[in-house]
Each structure stands twice: as structure tokens, then as C-alpha cells.
Amino acid sequence: MLWSGWGDPAKAAELPEPVRRLLADFLGVRGPAGPAATFGEVRLPAPVLPPPALAALAAITGPEHVRTDDDARIRHTRGRSTPDLLLMRAGDGSDAPDAVVLPGSHDEVAEVLRVCAEHRVAVVPYGGGTSVVGGLVATREGFAGVAALDLSRLNRLVSVDAESMVAEMEPGLRAPQAEELLAAHGLTLGHFPQSYEYATLGGFAAARSSGQASAGYGRFDDMVVGMTVATPRGTLETGRAPKSAAGPDLRQVILGSEGAFGVITSLRLRVHRAPGRRVYEGWRFATFADGLAAIRRLTQDGPSPTVLRLSDETETMVGLAQPGELGTSPSGSGCLVVAGYEGAPEDVSYRGERAAAVLTGMGGVHLGPEPGEKWAHGRFSAPYLRDSLLAAGATVETLETACFWSAVPRLQESVRQALTGALGSPLVMCHVSHVYGTGASLYFTVVTAQTGDPIGQWAAAKHAASEAILRAGGTITHHHGVGRDHREPYGAEIGEVGVEILRAIKERLDPVGVLNPGVLIP
Ligand SMILES: Cc1cc2nc3c(=O)[nH]c(=O)nc-3n(C[C@H](O)[C@H](O)[C@H](O)COP(=O)(O)OP(=O)(O)OC[C@H]3O[C@@H](n4cnc5c(N)ncnc54)[C@H](O)[C@@H]3O)c2cc1C
Image 1 (cartoon, helix red, strand yellow):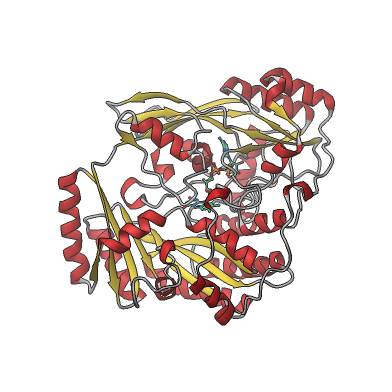
Image 2 (spheres, rainbow, N blue to C red):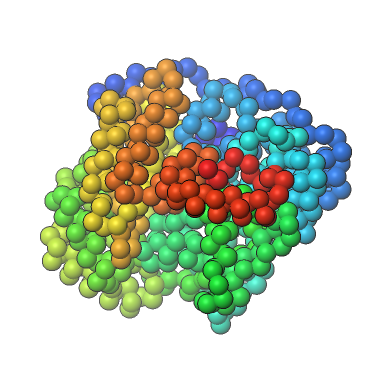
């Protein structure tokens, strides 16, 4: 992973000429503010972990799995939000951990937590490092130092129960590794977020991730049937049956807890048979409202596609759903729907035909497989464009929310107005990314000309958008999680009693407070 950007540097994306023109003519982007820092120019604070703590950690994992070199520290600094990338591009390594610890088993994780509590060392569980909400930056005050707990050595497929369709997998598996291991058994998880190439199973559970095929396979938290969790107070095992009436479901306490309550060391996950056929196609609707009505009907009455995504007029015009064609209005005017079907060949045909009848009846124009195939082909490439946009002098960032269907139009308009009010005349694009019987998730992509203080510029816009989301009845996050960035609005969303419950759990499971301090809890 590129230390100051996204992904494999060999896949860096050049900005197409139409996009450069769009940036200059419509947004007034006038070139980069200055060159980005090189790796060697990153300013790191001196490491402060006391030698006895380092020695105790090395005794658990072996000294080769406790790293304090600049390379490891820089590569475990923050996540991959735009402010995170802007700070790295400016050479700011002030949030670097003092050490990176790589445990190899549940028992080692449990011991590391014990030692860190004893020495008051803050521990940041680190999966793929793709958090976009500040989930990987620990508060330093009151601690003897910060250790990143890199889970990449916990990377095994432990077992497959093909009868129950449950696989036990370790949290440090990256999504492609997990899919490869399952493919050998003819199985799939069906979890394909845009961060697929780098994010891990543990990170998906800890941040309640949702993938692009969630209409068919569900969100990641739907897939978790059980977990093993190491906490400073001992081990928690959750999920012994598919459903249970044995009190509140403690899985829900850990899902979305972002390392603040414990470290997930094993996951029992529902799996699916690998699809025999995949079909993705495009539809055009005259307006966003028409498209919304159609995808709502499909979601509520069936047949449900595996992938269902609706772009608004601006996103359709720019072509964001098909990054290979960016800036060329590849799907024409109106609003693009991408509908995809995965499964057994006959089931794919049956659902596709019935869904086509519903979409046509709701005013949709069938565009054939091309837009769908282009979406599928480019589905993981859009993040590479962000680096090129930042380098060109544009600020680009995303945010997401969800609400009930009846509130969708007002929520979309409120967020758009808030972003426009804060940024002047940005490009605001929106799509419906995940659908449920009762509502949907809205995902916004914002592009604007960078000011001299792009971090402050985005902070103001994000604040305005967050207030608009809460006012319009949305949740502060549908799948990115809380981290540090959403902590305060999350507090407003769950209220005083909700915050007290979280604090009580935290105090009980982590009495010294070493687990990811500053994250999640308002
Ligand atoms: C370009 C881009 C595209 C993205 N697209 C999507 C998307 O389509 N859908 C989506 O849902 N999200 C998306 N995200 C957000 C991000 O990928 C998800 O939040 C993902 O779940 C994080 O996984 P990770 O392994 O990288 O976790 P990390 O970023 O390493 O960690 C995330 C949080 O979980 C904690 N954590 C990690 N592992 C564990 C563990 N084993 N036990 C306890 N706590 C742990 C960390 O401390 C941190 O607080 C995107 C991010 C980027 C940068």
C-alpha cells in the first residue's frame, strides 16, 4: 500500500483530459499547492515506549515481531481519509505509533493486552489501515506510548463447515486472500467494498462494513455468526447458534466497536456457494426521484438484485460509476442504475428477467450490459483517482449516511446544500449505494478547488454535512464507522443514556483504557 495514498503505486491513475478541463473550467482548480513530501521527509516524533514495555512485548511475540523502525511506524500512521492523506503528503507523521507489534495467535494478543495495560501503553488494532474516520489514531495523553497491533499474521482459514455454510477465519486476512481461500472450497463471502484490495475481515467487523453486493449477500455484520474477542479482562466468545433468545446479542456490542472494547481474533462467517454466473447491466431513469421509486419497488417487492446502485444526475453526467470513462457522460443524461445478479445461472436469468419487467414498468430504459460491465471492471479503481486529484490541487472526499425511504429526498438535498454552503461551488455527486426494505444509504463524493488550508476547508464542510444529516433524520454513518471523526455526532445520535452504556462497557472490559483511546466513545 502506498504510504501517502491509495493502493499499489503501479496502478496509479492519470487524470483523463476531460476531467482536467472540468476541474479547471468549472471548479477553478489551479494546480498543486506544492510538491508532496517524500518518504524520507516525513517528520516522526521520537519513539517513547519505555524499554521494559518493549522487552515484555518482544518476549511475547519474539523480538522480530516488535518493530520500531521508521518504515513500520510511517506505514501504520493513520488511515486513508482525505485529511489523513493530506497530512502525509505534508510530511506530518505526528500520529505515528511508537512501535508496531505483530502477534501470531489469540493467546499472544491476550498477553499483549495484559502487558500494555500493565505499562499503560495505548493499543491500536490495525487491520488493513483503510479507516476513513480516524479509527487508527490513539489519544496519547495519559499513556506511556502507543503501539499499533498489526493483525496481519492472523491470516488463516481455520475451518469450513460446508453443511452449515460457516467458515472460521482469522481477522488479519485481507478480503482478496479470504476470497481465494474460500474459492478453493467453491465458496464466497460476497463482501466487496471499494477498499476490497486492502481491508481485512477484522476491520470489516470492527467498523460494520458494507460491500457493493450488499443487496444480495448482506452487510458484513449480517455475515458474522460468531467471534472470539481478546479483552484486557479475558476472552469473550459470542455466537453459538444461528439465532438465539439467550438475552441481548453480545455480537452487536463488538461489531462496530472499532477496537475500543477488545480485539477480534477469530470470526465465524456465513458463506455462500460461489456464483456460477454474474450479470451486471445498466438502466436509465429520467430523474433521481424516478430511479428512487423504481429501486425501492424492486427492493420491497422483489426480485432482489445482488448489486443495486442509483447515481444522481451529476454523478451520471460525470461518469463516476464507470471510472474508465470518467468525464465523458458515458451513460448519457438522466440517472444511471446498475443492477447486478449473481448466483446459479437459471436463478440469475429468472431474477434478471423479472427485475427488468419491474424496472421497465417504472419508466426505466434498458442500456444493456455495457454500463454494468464497465462498473464491475472499474469498481476498485476510483480510489486511485483521488491521489491524482489531490496532486492536481483538488480536494476530494466522500461521506455517507442512511435513512428511511420517506426521508431520502430531503436528506439528499440537505447534505448537498450544506456542502455547497460550506465550499462555495463544489461538485457534489450522490448515489444510493445500499438498499433495504425500509430505507437506503446515500453516498456523496465531493470535489472542490483546494484552498491554502485544505484540511480546515474539508473540516468545515464535513461539520456542515454532519449537522445536516442529523437534522434530516439520517444516521451519521451507514458503513464507514465512528472512529474519532464521527464521535461527537454519534453521541448526539444515541443520546445521553446511549453514551453512558458505551462508557460502562468500556470501563468494565478495559479498566485502564488502553484499547484505542479516543475512538468511538463520545
Ligand atoms: C478508498 C476506500 C474505499 C472504501 N470503501 C468502503 C466500502 O465500500 N464499504 C465500507 O464499508 N467501507 C469502505 N471503506 C472504509 C474501510 O475500508 C472500512 O471501514 C473497513 O472495514 C476497514 O477495514 P481495515 O481492515 O482496513 O480496518 P482498519 O482501518 O485497519 O481498522 C478500522 C477500525 O477497526 C479497528 N480494528 C481493525 N481490526 C480489528 C480487530 N481485529 N479487532 C478489533 N478492532 C479492529 C481499528 O482499530 C480501527 O478502529 C473504504 C475506505 C477507503 C480508503
